[in-house]
Image (cartoon, rainbow, N blue to C red; front, side):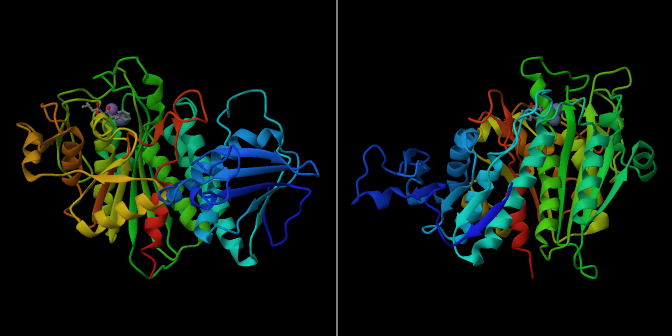
Length: 463
Ligand code: BES
Ligand code: MN
Ligand code: ZN
């Protein structure tokens, strides 16, 4: 399927014409008032389709992607020829958002269905100046990468093992020309990634540490390391979870997917930023070999961790990744994304990721970027006294506070312990936003959250 840019409209072909609410106040059209996300189908004299698409009010501009996605998702099965998009009222940034939404609408969730879907029979033609081509191309690439990481998150846990995530990263690195290094169980042991290994010990599948390096400025320092939680399935381990909605714990690698997608997209776009993605991946399974509550484990940092609850596993995988990044890679910014706590979901629902950082400047930057693309973050505190909840009698730190309060903040405090006081560290708890209900599937499914947020942030590091 192609995305073309043309200057001249073809009246014999279908067309989508966006309208803001304000434009329709003087000119009234029956049955259509430009309401956010609404659309009206008309037919031309030639018999082609004309879609009036409602962009809503100015405050909805950051949600343009959604509007285009919804229309394409609902109408695409009817389309047999080219579909034009009238871009005369849209800026390039908005055209890019439209293209992302349109590409996201083409996402196929039924990868495991035996009946294959029909071939796509149409191309998109953006009616705009030639100079808009770059925005359209970037939108298409962004949508494609988001779709491929959504496919990872939606994939069943028997398919997307830690080794599979490693293979995905390797294939992406080959395709888009960046480096990928994998640690298997033996290599993890050799290099001391004991916390990742502890989480994966009860699984029939080996664990992996995945390092993706896109370094277009080989002589310069690393600008940013992205660390992702890659738990391919979270049973809770010996501290086992209940079975209600347990199948959704296949999405516990949503942070890893966002990290892998962000590195891929940065490379695809050729951004002049040195980026490394690190994913600690394991399956948290129940078995005779599983790590136990009460165990004291080692970690890459050398610090010992008392396991209070094996269901607080994500922070262990992240601890090793963060410590490796802080000690060995020394980036300017250290950003992790993880479906870390139910507490973040209870606090912010499905509307925003919980953000933790000691940097006011980074907090502000990420808040603004998140708002502008509608992948929102909301800052929560990491107070000094919260760390006391993690003091262990027998080890350097314990993995869970005994009190059932401030869970997301205390998890962040745990992570902070492994960051070597990195001044540019930001933790995003994306448990509420990586996976959820939407109008594109009957059950909960991947949202693709985090790829754009990270890449738009990475753009601000270009020098
Ligand atoms: N993967 C979960 C967190 C999670 C919950 C993600 C809901 C997405 C939706 C994490 O590993 C976990 O199990 N957290 C527990 C910790 C518990 C031991 C306190 C939680 O937050 O309930
Ligand atoms: Mn867990
Ligand atoms: Zn988990």
